Length: 224
Length: 218
Image (cartoon, rainbow over all chains, first blue to last red; front, side, top):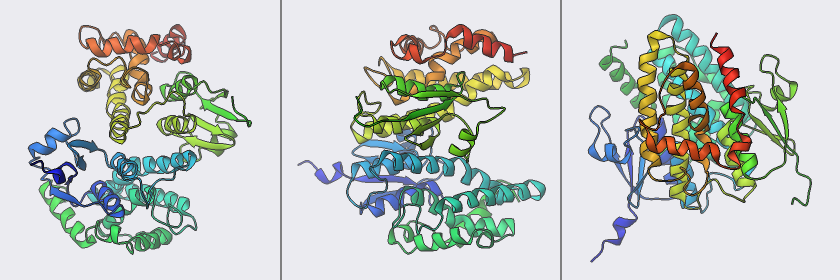
């Protein structure tokens, strides 16, 4: 007898501190999709990960009907197109889609890269990193404007792309010795508003847990 | 045959492969447009207003609304003008195409570019990474005529640098990266790509591009 349930079994290859993986969890939760979450040890990658993402060997990977989809924002678009019922994360209007893709791209190219300078570096490099990071967040805050969400009245693609990084804010602030709320109050308020959604609240780890991870990471990699 | 007036304007730079992606997309769809060549040492007010974040080309302005980032623009063009689609209808195949076009952009272009412009010290490592990137693409193209299958698609457009610029730059730099001996399938693709009837009209003339990059090697 064929196990038809297995055909539709979604599996997410995850690493819980990863903001990129959190994006996928939020998208799956928004759509009400059940899935199996497998934690990867990035120091000892599983044969499944190496098979399903042979080029990058990175998480997140979504496995659906035996197919693997890689790159977090690519997976989010795939989820929106495959389960194309409400809530829709992207508008059907091509111009709106182009604008959210632009900002998704901007977030991808800047937030992690610059944020890493803040929590891993020291002295002058860290100070420059902090300055750059605040500029980046301010630009995003500008794009948010007076809207409740980047998606307007509800969570959209850009919200999903950015909100995971808020679980890292405490880590950035503690290592960088500064207040993100002091510099970008609207953005922090937006982050809290997003956390009122179940899909976000259950997909983001507690900021203190992230901070503890960062401390251990720095010790292991002699970055203290 | 638009019933209403469509205003399509494109700000670009002719030697830039990023700019060229937009030109390819517009020509493949048969869209009429106005072109404005930007002088990046003296950026126009129009460029600064329409791309305030990056202040870079290419920028597409459609009925007064600007779109930036070459691959974002190409997908916008594909979604707005639905003939000759660049992406297949199936969501998994679309995700796959987007994955590969992003990979070309992030993993292939930088080492290939570096291999040509790096000094002696960095050259060896850059060439090694470039060869790795080409190998990945060789495996992906396989026996397909184009990355998009029977016709040019998003990935082919994204890989225009590999399909056309690499040949010119490797001649100038005296490097043998993409050759029919080393990467027969990818090389064959590059020939199919650069001789495609519409693509070849959109690519800048070889001698002009050669002269442009040659003059920059000093």
